[in-house]
Length: 120
Image (cartoon, rainbow, N blue to C red; front, top):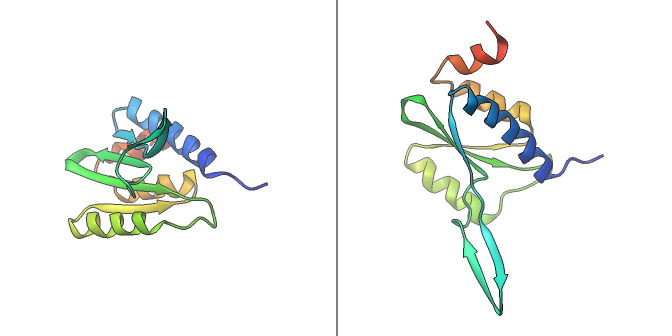
């Protein structure tokens, strides 16, 4: 059975909530899109922006886009990635909770992130 992008996002958000409760990070679930109101569309969010913005200690930020195993970025997402990367920010595409955890661990400016998860 294929796992949907929404299910992967939900599972990653559960992990982020747990880390946020432990004060290891702060995150924003970044929604963007449009909705129809009466006879017009209202757009919200920045086109191409990632699913999660994760704020770590030391002023570090991870821009995290969630995709399925075969999912591909839109051109707007690629453009966004290029812009923030040129500014020195970290942007990653993740396809599972495990990949998200690995990215957070590699950017682990607060060593307690892994310590709190493993209990060591």
